Length: 538
Image: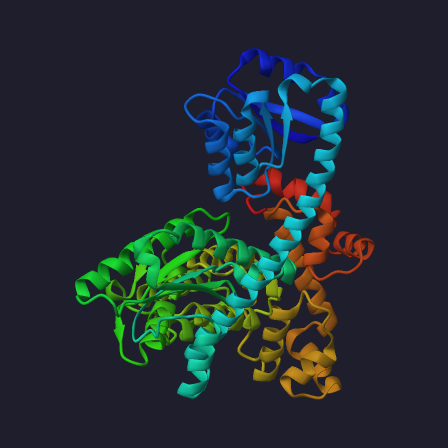
């Protein structure tokens, strides 16, 4: 249905027009009626009609002035003028100002209106196609200009170009300022690495375009924004480059930059996804653009530790580029802590790492790499998507707490593994390997390679010193682990089977009953009835 608004000061005329059935027959819907031009202007943006039917003679604001106002910002609205016989001069002026059609009031009836609306619908369809093509062409032009602007700033920031080449890029991008006195406001989306796995490249580009459009809208008509260029630099990073050279006092420069930062921050807060705002100091000289960008970029990394505020370079220290000693030490010790079931030592070391990282404001990339090294030490596999989500310290802490919960069941609460002093270093090394890898499909050959021994010799040595064969020892380890899960979790038995390193449910059940005298379900029921508080893990 084509949305239609009627404007006429005569109540009877409005009532008569709305009563005609030709509207519905022709595919038009009357969404409102108004009494004068001023009221009509007030409701146009709200109702968004496609067709306006207006009288030329109305109080307060007549149809002529209404058409003039409408055409200042809306060329697509189809306008039909209603007139009487003595309104001909008005009609001529209305058509000159952009009305599309006129009709005498006393000639309107069901048939004449239906015929008129048929012509109107055809004209509207042609107009929509025309404006869609024009909008598409304009969009391509704007997109091309935006790419040239982004290319210029990227060349200034990251490229190696001569002054002549940079000047040619600046002119081609229609950038009229040289940025010798510069401030930079960066808006970065820390979730962008993760979002890339959720959306197609086209969808990501559209999200970036929408925010840039929104930001430009928020900055328009602001005096402070006259010397700015806003561009998208890729990977969820938006930049507002501010040329402050026309302001003579540094205090005025700072005020200008601060007000712009507040506008940018507000635009970020209005988005469905997080965007953090960071601001450089005021930089001077031919390299001021690059210096200001690097300052703002350094501040953007602090969003890993604090969110929801503008991060100013003058008020904060950048992240440190070295890993705290506590974190490096933990990587060295973690295998021994797990192997020796030192739960208290593990907890203390982990907490010391988190405290040091937050205190020193370690670069987020280093924290993420540290976690990957930790996972490698503990033989834990995560997807790229999981690592991409670690954009806040609190998310890293949450993941590590889950890891702790898992380790408490997987390692710290298994049966003791006190080895006698007679056990050789080679066998101790193999026991350590089993303890870390027992949930994987490991075999004697894997352990022998790890220990640097011949497989046959290792089989002999292991049974001699441990009193049990290699395969039987791995099996006991898996059953002990499964018993811990059954006692302390509410996991389904099928999940217990998978987490314990068994591939076959029936084999697990048969082996479990043979080694414990109970089925897995009976074992769980008995264990949890003896200790009702045991089932605490999910």
